[in-house]
Length: 414
Ligand code: PLP
Image (cartoon, rainbow, N blue to C red):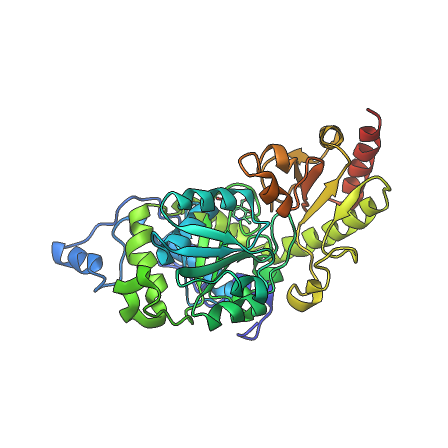
């Protein structure tokens, strides 16, 4: 890492964890709506951004700041803004750079909620063109004068397509367009998209960053390197801030007005949860790899996981992911009925619509997360009628393997 220490040390002792007002070792939870001042003049200065300070939690809160600085530090960003959810983060980031008539180029195989959001944005006149794996050729053939952003997922959920960030960033930058990357499933432990060339990184912190399954949240991290020019009409009033135009627009305008701030208690839970991100990710990736290999031995189950040589994006493991395959794997069982039987036969594994928890979770995505998506989009996301998504946790691997092997056997007997 750039300041001399390694991942876990930086998480715990990075430059933003220097202590707080009363020397607390963790950021206190400022569970308040508003902040009081000695004089009206002082509050006026805070509102006018002429004095540092907090006025109202929707437009800033010290617990949120502590969490934002921690994620920003781990991603190597120039500044971060936390949000009420991952979806709020994606919405705010896209609306900051797109207005009616503008276009987004998005990778296919995105998380179902993001696909739904992109459909919602059509009603505001913001059009999305889907572009397979966001290769240079795919991006270049979809660029128009109205393209304002290229958006992709670092490791897509659950298709497990890996974004070639240097290639996508180069193609976008040559056209004067930024690359936004949802890195929820990779986390800064596996990849840091800003260091690979991306301009903005987004997370649903509800997942791996929090890790304990106890707080919904999101975050937008700005790399602060992109040159916003006259093409970026949504930022016209903010271009005077140069490379900070995107962050300033979000912080002082859109984020405030959308009212999508993270709750202070959630910022605290996400902050403390993140302390163990490195340990959890190491264990999760090791468990996912061992489970994938064990289930790959079952003749009638098709396993998709990045560390398996059969995976189409296997080569990216060494190139971009530091050898780690992440915590998601998918299983194809032959039929929807068998997928349901297998899920229902699991003993330790919970049936729940989440990923990144310390507990292993499973879901049948076609009947839940992709209920509103069309067949083509669903299949591009690697989701078929017989697909099960597994979000691997930190349990003892012997128990997980035994549980899955038993459920595979039970599911065979209709
Ligand atoms: N991005 C990805 C890759 C996700 O998996 C999810 C949720 O599953 C989201 C965004 C949305 O996050 P949230 O549920 O926090 O709104």
